[in-house]
Length: 60
Image 1 (spheres, rainbow, N blue to C red):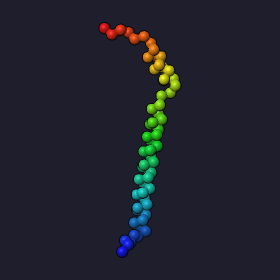
Image 2: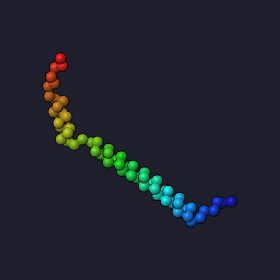
Image 3: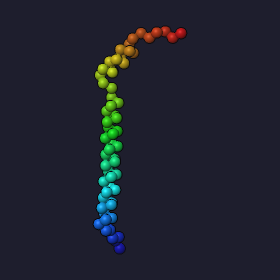
Image 4: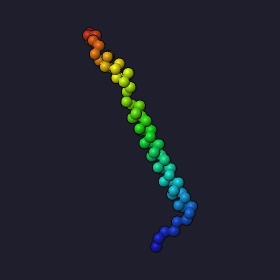
């Protein structure tokens, strides 16, 4: 025998699915934004390269 679902049960289930999907999308977008911000700008790359090429003082 198939279980009987009321319209309220279906509404609650749809709300839960919607909330979980929305949360997953928010986490995905936040991860993408943080990943994009982790890529350094060309100016930062140039500064690091210049600092690496500069002569280092001898350690005592």
